[in-house]
Each structure stands twice: as C-alpha cells, then as structure tokens.
Length: 486
Image (cartoon, rainbow, N blue to C red; front, side, top):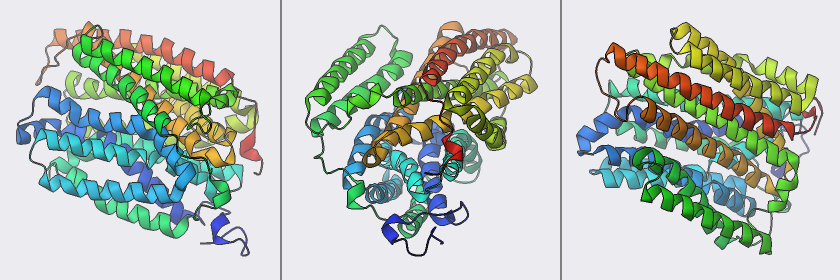
C-alpha cells in the first residue's frame, strides 16, 4: 500500500490511485456487496424454505421483509453512532455481527427463528451500509478518485442486488438453502481483514463529541420502520386495512415527534438545518426517485421473465445482465456529463433517461426481450448518473464530522425509494391483473392481462420518477467537483 506521501501518519493515510487502495477498496466493496445481495438472495429460495420449514405465504413474506425493515429503520441510527464512536470501529463490529449471525442458520428449524435471524442480519447490515460509503471518502483526497471509487461501490452494490436471485438459483441446484446464509461468514471475515489492514483508524478530531441522541434514535427507527411496514402491509392486507392505516398513523405521529425532538434537542442525531441546504435536500429526493425506478423495474421484470415468459430462475437472472454491463460501461458518459455540465444538468439528463426508459418499458413489455433490454440500458444510464453524483454531492455537503450520517441519509433515501417502488408495482399488478400469480404455464389471456397491467404500471412510474428525480436535480448546484482536487 502506498500513501500519497511517506510522511503521512497512519491516521490520515490517503491513496493516490484506485490501484494503490485496492485492499481497503476491495474490502469496502465486499462489505457493500454482501449487505446488498442479502436483500434479494433468499427470494428465489422461498418456495424451498416454505416446504422445508412448513411455512405459509405470510410467514415467507416476513423472511424477506424482516431484513428490509430493520435495515431501513436503523440506517440513520447507525450513521449517528459511527460519527460518535468511530466509523471503522462500527463497521468492524457490524461485519463481525453479520458473519456470526449468519452461522446460526444451522440451528434454525422454524420460520419464526429464520425471521428473527433475518431481522438480526438487517441490524448488522445497517451498521455497515452508510459507513462503507463514507469511508470511501477517507481513502482519497482527489475528487475524481472519490467519484470513481463511488462508482465502483454503486456498481458492486447494484450487482449484488440484481444478481441475488441468479446466485441463489444457481446455488440451490447444488446445495441446501442454508448455504445461502452460511457463505456470509467467510465473506464478512475477509472484508473485516481488509478494512483492518487498509482503512486508517478514526481520528478524534474527525468525530463528533456530542452524546448519542437515544430518543431521536428510537423515534427515527419507529418512523422509518412503520413507514416501510405500511408499504408492505398495503400490498399484503390492503391500503385501507386497519393494519395499514394504523402503521401510517404511527409513522406520522413518530415522524412529527422526531422532528419536534430534533429541533429542540441540544445534540440532535440529525440536524434538520442541513435540509435547508439545497444539495442535501435535492440529492436525497433524487435518490428516492432512482430507487423507485430500480426496485419497481426489478420486481416487475422478475415476474415478467419467470411467469409471463416462463423462464427459469437462472435464465431470468441472466436477463438482468444489461443492468450490470451498462452500469460499468456508462461510467465515462456519466463522468463526462458531470465534468462538462455540472451536477444539476447531469442529474437532469439522468432523470430524463429514467422517465424515457420507464415510458419505453410501458410499450416494450409486449414486444419481446430486445425492446425490454434496450429500455434497461437507457434506465441504467440514468441510474448510474443520478445515483453516483447525488451520493458524492450529499456526503460532500455534510460537515467533516457528519459524513456517516450523510451516507446514512443517502442509503435511507434509497431504502425508502426501494420500498415505494416495490409497493407501487406490487399493488398495481395485484389490482390490474391478479392478486395471486399462478405457478406453471400461464394462459395466453393471463399473459396479455399481465402485459396490460405492466403498461399502466410503468407509465405511472415514468411520471412519478420523472417528477421526483428532476425535482431533486433542480436543487443541486452547478458544481464540477469531479475535476477539482479536494
């Protein structure tokens, strides 16, 4: 490992190239990959788990929902802890908890135990997600290197999210479903070693000395957790059901209490004044828009490929490869847009790509895979541009001792968008097509009904995403930070 200068002490070590930082960068990417792939890895194994543990449909939904609820609900709290206790320290604890918790799957013999395990993994992942992103900024002083490193992180994270069903489906052909979680342990260990060796320890002056805002932490968990559950409950129980309405009311009450407490607290977990900064506010809003698009399309296309087309899980996973290839190939274009036109215009271009791609999908779902793949490529260019620029802009807009909470805001916005996107698509397809998707070969009438539902769904998403992402982009600055040194 080579620092930018031999006289730089370990606590402030930075790197002059991505190659020089390969050990810590690979470790951070690995940590980000494993937490993202766990979002979707078990989705392909749910039928197998149901047969093995004798689970019903509702219980199986909680196998995946428990992870996302604890993960989304604790992101802000974890970011706040990291800014106080040390980012590297909290990340190492999160990796240890993630790996050790995964090993306990060998003792699971009921759905309830598996749900509890998944909730625990979500807690550990929340301690990892915002910190992996914020630590990337510590590795480099040069803004162009930070941009490229953030691009790499997003590509790896997207790969994990998209490849989860493919990896899970392939593994299930050879091993039991428990191995899908057991593999987390060695991955977490390797990532922890890389972080320990290559990431500098936190300096006291880079942390905040404020006491932890425990009431704020509890209220933020209740707000985000209940909001995420309300979206899940809306799909499962109906939007006017008592459970859903109670969740919405609880989220609103907790949210108002959180705002009131943070405004009056001496050491708030989240200083609400940061939202007066247009960059912070706009970047978070645009990230919600991109995640709505990504989650909505992925959820819809998983159903599209496996049910309407009748493809196997492996083939359906391979059909998502245009997302990964484009995410990598679009890097020069996205960087050129940011350097040439600045953050605002580049994000507006990205938002336009998202809206056009979703509108294209509304037409393309009935015209074969080639049309769908083209729309996936255009959408990914938009995702790549908006997600990377907004992640960099949001963290840079935060004070030096609040970078973890900035990264947590970025991840929370994405988690909210993911929940909204999945809920919108799931609800519209249930309302327009059928609440129960039958297994086996579909009739031609059902396939055509499904295509019709998709056309309306993606048309609605095009409007929602276009307005949200463009609205957020408009509040960004004309900064060209990718070509300036820190």
